[in-house]
Amino acid sequence: MTGRGLALALGGLALAAGCTTMSNPGFPDAGPLDASLDAAPPMMEDAARPPAPTRETCTEAGRGATIGQPCAGDTACDDGCFCNGVERCEGGACVAAEDPCVDDIDCTADSCLEEVNRCIFDPQPEMCSDGDACNGAEVCDLAVGCLASAPLYCNDESSCTVDSCDTLTGCVFSPRDLDGDGFFDGRCGGDDCDDDPRFGRMIYPGAPEDCTNRRDDDCDGSRDYNDSDCVPTNDTCALATVLPGPGTYSGSTRALLSDYTLGCSTSRGPDSVFRFTLDDTRDVTVSVSGAGAGAAVTIRAWADCAAGPEVRCSAASPPSVIRRSLPAGEYAIIVQTPGGIPFDLTLRAESPTPDPPGDTCDSALDITSGTEAADAAVLLQDTLPSCNSTFGSYRDAYFTFELTSVSDVTLTTSDTAFHYVNLMTTCGDLASEVRCWSGSGSPMQTWRSLPAGRYWVTVGTSTTTGPVSATVDIRPPTPIPPNDRCGGAIMLRNGSSRTDTTIDFGDDVAGGTCAGTARLDAFYVITLSSRRRVLISVSDADGGTTRFYLTLRGDCGTPSDTSSIACVSGLTSPAPASATLNQVLDPGTYYLIVETAASDTSDYTISAALFAP
Image 1 (cartoon, rainbow, N blue to C red):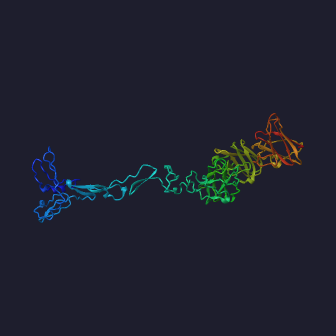
Image 2: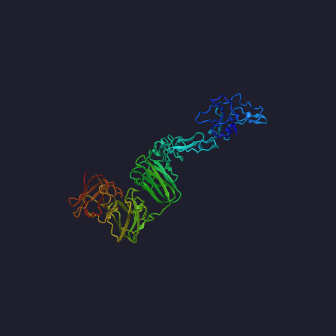
């Protein structure tokens, strides 16, 4: 192989060996070496001696000068230049050579450096690029050409950026805006309070506030009716908000009026009205949260929206009502608050369940033959008897018994906390109420000479757990004292005096504010034809210490009515105990109620005297 041929053989190197002219400084100029050495590497004569100098033989004038010249062999055709290849002798004439610096790798830039007789193959990785920065920067390998690189790992390990890759620029780490509304997530330093891509696109600073979606649409820190932008309009039944079905809804009584009276609430406040439809019988629960103390909620049939009665009503804290097996139909919900307060209203409708034993008229427990008990934990209040003014604050148990003849009946209950006992001839019908008593500490009630028939008893309790039991003792009848009832009130006249008793009397009215509610009462009536000073005195006929209470009214009152013209709590010392009422009255008819505690009964003397005012 000639020197020039050897150079071609070494073309895979970054620099190929070049042709040189060698001279020896210790001898006369020997002239050009044989052309076959043009492409050979420099030769070292002795490792201890410096390398021989080189002299380039390629000139511009000589480049390709041999082409077409007659020749007898390849050597005669060599023009002394490396970069135009090794000329050959073909057919007696010199022909041009092929470019010595060409490889088979497409991604290299091929060049030749005549000064050192070397081929240079420079890798150009940009020639390998497929235009996609995301799959990595392709490389140029001198042996095999273009090679793929590892794809970019676009993850900055930050939850506050959205990591992506742009085919032109590579990895992109954008501030998080998952919902694409143009506002960055507030949890990452932005001002978008809801970046959830499912529904956050319409929630951002300055967005219009939707008063019904339970979201802070404008990101001002207040949602729905807590936001001053939202003002409720469901002030009356005619303007009721229609609820599409079970769920939790926002409401408020801000800027609304007090339009309705709720049976379970003793105070009035602004109210808001909702309407819902049941397609079939369901257990319905309605609860209110966030309205504060004094709030109340009621369910009414839609036809009874304005005036009632309640299907269920609660003034508990927080108020919540349950109505099992509520029939299909249209219903109203009225929420009343002590002031203009925003709240959350939750409506649930679940599969109907039977009433627990003793919870309603339909599940009343029969106590004719013995004691029965209901579980207070599952009871609800279903009726508002005349001797109790609050609906929804208690739980009531229903019992029933049957009399085959006129009898005295004593009912004993297990509850000594505040409770009420209501006797009816038709269950749930307050118009059929026979007697009603309310108070605390008295678990026994006696009803005299009840006619034969079936009766229902409602025992309302303030307890929330444990059994509520009832037992009846049925005995032969005894006469009812005439003045045990208002209709049998005894007439008092000027100067009259008589001895009476409250033994075996019942509790028919609440009496005055000085007497409380749990008292046995006897009724008297006095009629004045002119303005007079009335002096009524009651004293213990046995000389004992029974405490008497005197209440003066314009009528007998109702079992829950505590209003009175005057009320006196008697003295127990010195004996005998006594009570005196001294009052100037205009002409008219007045009722006087003498009361004692059930455990403090005694005969008493009552006298009346009239004086000029």
